[in-house]
Length: 366
Image (cartoon, rainbow, N blue to C red):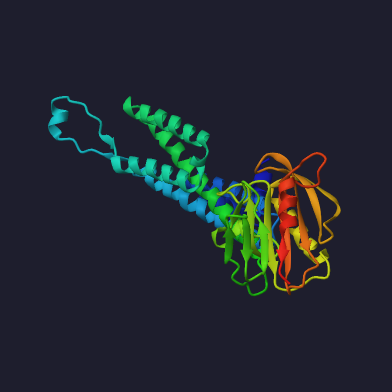
């Protein structure tokens, strides 16, 4: 056995591995935790972004890791500043009076709560009532520990708040970066024009765009979302977004929703557009936004709309739904229009009645 141990140093790289092991042992507990965290975080981030091209995958993973790393050390710094030592007069010890020599720093305590509230507001955590209720109950519990002067549970509670806030901020940052990447992948390669000049006639509920020579009827309880008010995620699709019609005045993606995309040149058929739309669906599928995607047969509507639709399970809005695209043919304008439709599944109907009414009302001046 001794001879085997004596042979170990002769193994190539043994001394380097031993030196590395010693250096790891010399690290502080915080640095060891960060090292373990980094391994798991990078693995998760690369796995989460594996559906993207290599360059985008690496870039997004590093962005997520950078944000979470900054927050990690920010929490460590704040936690170390949470308490401070008190220098007691010598007379206290002489007369036998015992008092705590460490006290909490009020402004650091406030910063923990402020950061947590701000993170919850900015990331939309408070948009759900259950999120507000959870936060209130948790904070009440943390403050209760403070009132009864239980520092251990109070500090654990503050740490939990900070971790929650850091997790929300990291996730939101990664989500925003993913949206930007998706938009960049499908961003139109032609010069975009101003498609924001829409006029609305309240009497007959008609939308009109003079630049496109296009008019559309807006059914009751439907709202139009101008491109200038849309975020990058809403603008992502086939071509340049010209507007969205949905049943919500605040959520352009609420079912049923009809997204109108503009392309400044004509297509003979929808095959090339359909290929792009399939890539768009594949991205959503790989991101986990949708599941159980099933393609239906090619569809023709009113002998001027040509396209294909899919059924799927919407993870973001838990339900089975239908999505697809229609290419508007048979008009004399030098551009193409694509209508991407998201709607609920209705037994016995190909499309919701309101969607068909919108498509039927579309008119392009010759």
